[in-house]
Image 1 (spheres, rainbow, N blue to C red):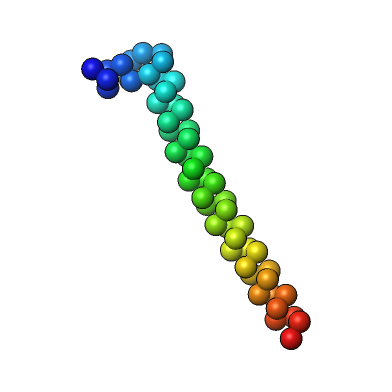
Image 2: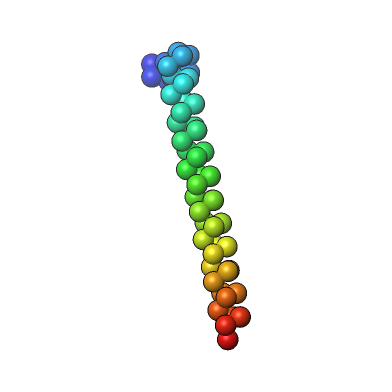
Length: 52
């Protein structure tokens, strides 16, 4: 019953879209932040090497 409502009604399809969008956004933010952290660590290490 719930699956039928999720995939056939307008409200169900919108809810499914929102769920998929939020999960996708979570993966995007995780990837974005891990990339920025990695870049900052590399910059910090480069500055430490140049100060020696």
